Structures are given as structure tokens and as C-alpha cells.
Image 1 (cartoon, rainbow, N blue to C red):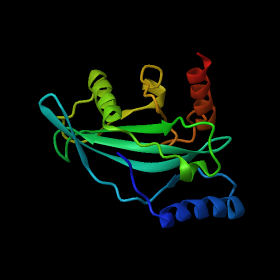
Image 2: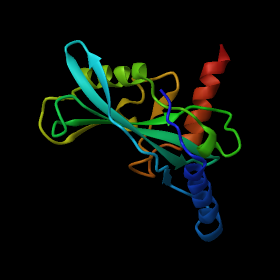
Image 3: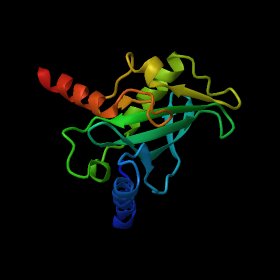
Length: 175
């Protein structure tokens, strides 16, 4: 499933990146692409999960990278939410990588995130709160073909996205 974005949406991101370089420190910690997000449903066994994915961007040492904030609910909107920030591993990054990377989680990716979270303590029937799959706690044991877990949307103290994406690319192309 893909997200369709108008040229106006991408111009907003590119203009923000340009202005940050001219007026700011030259770095952008994150950028939100304002694309309407919708709730999707995924059925696993007897339970229906509702999820959404919000396209964002994070700045690494060498480039800007697409990052998808995935949120899932398993028992209504007031139930404990699952959150996973997914860093796209697209590399080498094309010019204007933030605007041209088309990575977006498929239902199989969301299913894998849900299954992993359930195994590691997410309680979707619990009321309120959030269960986060963090890079710090879960990145070593969880992988998706096109994404890595990242904490960069929550803290600039997390690992550099550019270095992580390059390492993932090198691992995939060694064999």
C-alpha cells in the first residue's frame, strides 16, 4: 500500500530543509510531511488491530532519512497503543532522499511489529498508555527487510541514522 503525496507536500519538505540550512544550524532533527494519515485494519487470529503510519524524516550525519512512526491499537482508541519508529534502509540515498524515498510499511511489516510486541510485553487490552518498541531495547532482536527501529524521533541522543542505514546496506550486500 502506498501513500500518494502531492507536489505541494514535497515542496513544503524541501523548502523547510533549504530554509533550515540557510537560517538555521544547517541541521534538521526531524521533519513531518503533512500527508493525511488514515486508520487501517489488520486481522491477526481473532483480533482486529487498527494502525496508522505517519511519514517523518530524521537528519543523520550524511543525509536526511525517511522515518515512519507506526502506531497500533488492539482494543479501541483508549487501549494501550503500540509505537514503533521505523527508519528506512534505502541506500545509497538519491538526491533529495527525504522527498524521494518511498518506503512505507506493508501489512506484513505491521504484522511482524505486532507479533514481536505481543511477545515482548505489549498488552493491547490494557487501557491507556503506550508500549514503545525502542531502538535501545529491541533493535538487536527485531528486523524488517526495509526498516530498522530508531529512537531518533524521540531523542537526538540515539544512534546516527546515516551510519545505521549504511551498515544495514553493507550487511545485505556482503553475501
